[in-house]
Image 1 (tube, rainbow, N blue to C red):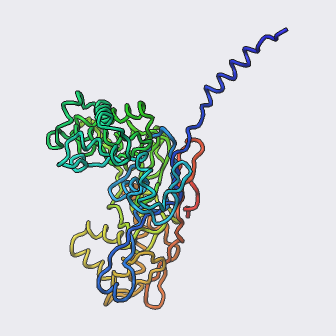
Image 2 (image 1 turned 120 degrees about the vertical axis):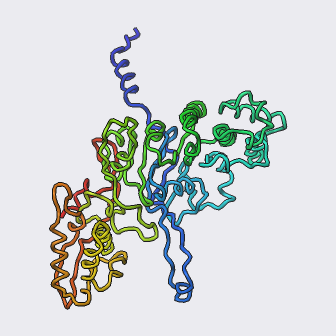
Image 3 (image 1 turned 30 degrees about the vertical axis):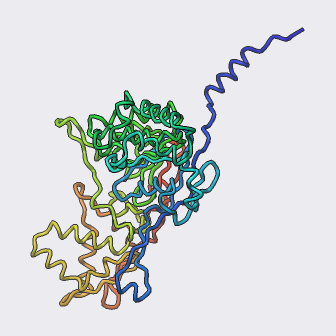
Length: 453
């Protein structure tokens, strides 16, 4: 006699499957990726055989991109976000590290090996005006990937696929645009044509490099919505490169904040925006304009500019601009020079000249990676005067102007052999660390306890 099914158990099992959805498959894994660009030195460096150094555009990035995800790469100009996106598609050659597409490491592939993959990995560039060949009509420009990858049987097949691509991106009726040239289109129409060309070969991944930054405000939201519609209809995965946090909040599932070639915060977009962890992320969010002129918003923006990527700071690259930097964040001699220059800029000329005369030569203060600094007193001054000046500087601070974080990294300061010697705390390189309660990863000593005094 057949037994009665346990409907309660079946219901519970179905509910559990609904609560625990299947994890999306991994599409791309990036592991310890570095992209360095060598600098051309002058005549002296070539004669001596010394290299001129390198720009660390991408410096040890780790990322996982799952199928169907929209990942935002956000940061200031020079943060390395565009280089990372281009390297992902093989448009830049990595210096080291791995890029695994569906488990296959493509980091060191040559052009011949990459050619078959380009059908599945496409890019939308920032400038739609420069992305289309002005000598090609839209029919030819959009359909060109079909010819390159041998995806059509005949002229009728070619025509049908071009028409379908134009319809998908909203260039309707398509017959109206087939014979037009880029110069006949508006900026928004050109970007739609670029998107049509990107999707016509049925890719899996689109890297969109600032796709709306050169468009009028009136069409930006429409292009982003179109990209979301294409994601839904074609099962696309996006890497969205932008400096615009507002569009990243609207468009992205996960967000990676980049600073000087590294990811400093990485996690679900909602979590990052609701409770930013890294001081740089907080500064970026504080810089978002407030549309209400009657609403006062505190602006704790980072001081200074993004450092030279050819000579990045020790430890955490953001520490020279960080208001809450700790002892082990990477303080060095050039940070003292930056402190003095900020102070002297606000002084009357007479006081500036008097303080600067205490130092014989400020050149040594500008050298990178100097963690034991010997300061010679200026003519007519003694080591004791310089030491007293620096001690007084260290003690300055008030509620309105807190003590400079720089001094937390100075572990010793004394007169020695006619000079004043400063020794700095050993720098510690912060790595991404998962905060389990939020699912956000952050690279900051505030969360690992290693930067405390």
